[in-house]
Length: 332
Ligand SMILES: NC(=O)c1ccc[n+]([C@@H]2O[C@H](COP(=O)([O-])OP(=O)(O)OC[C@H]3O[C@@H](n4cnc5c(N)ncnc54)[C@H](OP(=O)(O)O)[C@@H]3O)[C@@H](O)[C@H]2O)c1
Image (cartoon, rainbow, N blue to C red; front, side):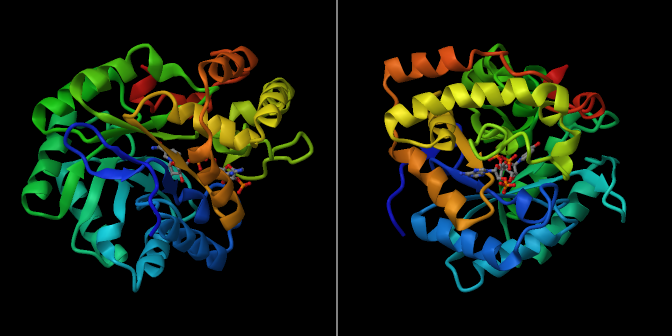
């Protein structure tokens, strides 16, 4: 294992590599993935010193957790900080049918995840979305019982707003909030990020490459035939504007001898020691590009140039479609 820079998640959480690996695209949502390459990518991440691995029980309906179990076979479990999301309900056709965070459902989801992952504990366990029919206090109360029983080490949240963060944290310390944050998704800066800081809650930022859109590898002729095809920022009317922002970023990246993805990730890293970007690399070449961001030191001048090239709110389109936005506590 090499020595990657480390960051601590919140005032109560574990210390993890400053960059985490998100496994979602290895099982779901971003079109076909190569299983052998996915496992090789997880191995390469562990070998490079990445410790934070993020999954969800609903990513490929259990497939993502089974993949992680396979990848961790023969590895030291203690070198991995496994973060699992639960609560999203799927149909057999893969459709999204709702959210369930009732205490009995949480215990049931957890029992299945532990078995699929082949482990006796999950390091950070979090509801993927809030359940409008269950007060957050009840869900966090059930999670606190699972901490007491030793099945989970820490409680996280995902895509919640400041009010829910406070209510949850009053029941049991919350380690980190997983939420979208990137050069083109800066909504957390007004209220959510200051609240998390006030409470000592870390941020695991996802979508730092806006699902590939601002990676520098997306182009207008690459049509999104997967979940991204439903995201407004990839739609025909918005894509041109958004890719123009990427080209502005490319000029800056070239001057620094870096790639666009590295600049986008390094920008998120520069936003605070309490923020750990999750990258969704599905291949070893993408992973190694992402890890290169850890070596990129951005000066104040660089940061100013980046923000001038991609001003906050410059992106065209919302980060999810209207239906999905309505499920986000963080957007209320
Ligand atoms: N809490 C939540 O609501 C939530 C929501 C979404 C994701 N997440 C978590 O966050 C993780 C990351 O999210 P994300 O996958 O949307 O993030 P992302 O890192 O913004 O996008 C990942 C995609 O960008 C493309 N890409 C191009 N260059 C890349 C590079 N150098 N490194 C990595 N990816 C590159 C790849 O697409 P191609 O392979 O198609 O080129 C990859 O699948 C997920 O795996 C998941 O664990 C959480």
